[in-house]
Length: 203
Ligand SMILES: [Zn+2]
Image (tube, rainbow, N blue to C red; front, side, top):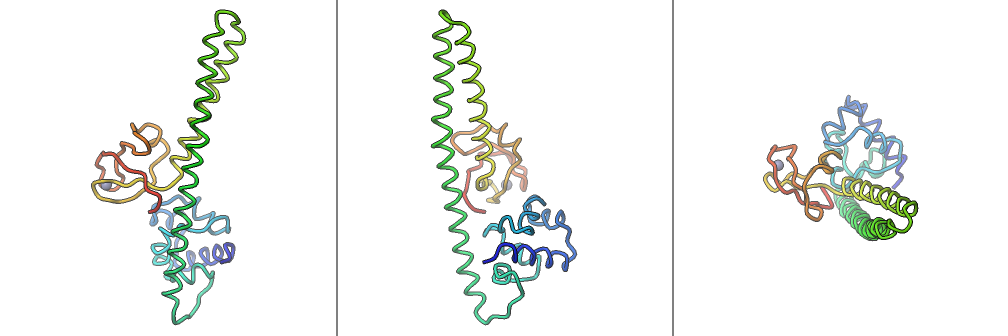
């Protein structure tokens, strides 16, 4: 696989089919930045979106991965193997990121809280150190929470329990949603119903 070649091929096929980056992004329910990243070879389309993308570009998955039009008897079989492999990679990458989130964020939050609490303890004896500890703790806490929310937002998808559609919510929706664990109460962009949407790792 050659990411750059695939990127140029995506751009060429997109233009052939009369789509702007924005129009193609809208059809796929993703951002046009994602498409720009594929086309410049910075990333590959997720396995979950490949079939839909290929359908729109009127190519097959094997051609997408090869970055050119190919005539092969058994391309279907090869493409399916590629898809399964890519899906596995996406799942693993997402699982790693979520694990990193918990490994990194939880100790950081604990350390920040410890700083704030010890700041409270020394307040009576040394007010300057207390203020420094509390301010530092608060800053670290905010950074940890923002980072956690960003990972939470960027990894995987949320699934609507009503219509079973999987989607990426806006950052604002993630921040404002009541949640337990990684399940968040949000409004589904497809059926508009509010409910507890579970985090899933692939589309
Ligand atoms: Zn729904």
